Every structure is written in C-alpha cells, then in structure tokens.
Image (cartoon, rainbow, N blue to C red; front, side, top):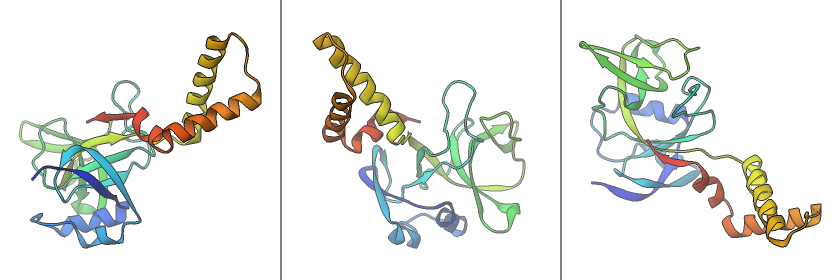
Length: 193
C-alpha cells in the first residue's frame, strides 16, 4: 500500500539488516531504534526508510546529483528496478553486509552498479537490491539559510531603498527562521527522483 508520512532516518549499518530480508512484510527491527523520523512527501510503503548520502560517488559534474549529506528515501518493497533507477544495494562479495547507493544498470543481461562521479569505478560484483530510491531531499544547514537571508535582506533593501545594516540583516535572518524554521532546509532542495 502507498502512504505518505514519517519514515525513519537510519544508519548505513542499520540498512545492512535488509541484506538478510528476502520478503518485505514490515519495517526491519532496527527501525524502532531510529532517533529521527522525517516526512516523506512521495507515496511509499510502510517499510520505507531514509539514509544520509555519504561520499561523492553519486555527485555528478552536471545534471541530477546526490551530494554528501543529502537524504535519500528508499522503498524496500520496490526491489525490481529498471535500467537507470537509483537503488540501494547490498554487496554480496563484501561479506559484512556492505551497503551502497548507485545507479542500477542492466544491459544485455549483465547487471552492475554505476556511480555518477566518473572518478569512481563501476561495481561489477554480485549484489542484492535492497530498495529503489523514491525521493531526494538536500538538507543544507546554516550556509543555505544565510544565503536565503541575504537574498531576503537585499529584497527588503530594494523595497525600502536603502542598505540594511548588520542589525537589520540579523533580524531578517531571524524573521526567516521564525517563518520557515527547519522547513526552509526541507523545501529549498527537495525533488522527485
């Protein structure tokens, strides 16, 4: 069933628990230990979880990119990807349930995992699909809030015809925080996968 709501933000180690799951019926036990739950705006199953992207293997030089720190939403009930889908997979030859996020490739009956960053090699080892990425949210901290506050203050300067002092800029940033709070981080760079 497709729902909308909160999903647990789990660690990559916790995601490794899915390596042993052959049939998805309910959330993995590690979900209950999750310290954070995030809203997922995309339709998803009850088993969906979120992961914070690590590293730069899925950072592209242009086009859609998944930089370090972004949040991906993974639906483990979607384990039959098509060529080009973004997936989370368990590397079978690693032995310790190593989990990775890559592009699923299937051409001429050959399957492999491809990074977006050309500085990283494709993975040709055996893998199990743990789920398909259904949504991406880039969470940017105070750096983004500062940039938005600056734009807002520049807008106010144009509106009132004068340069705002540091005190007014700080108040503008405070106003933005009150207006948007942490939602600002969610809304600025959220996109469908």
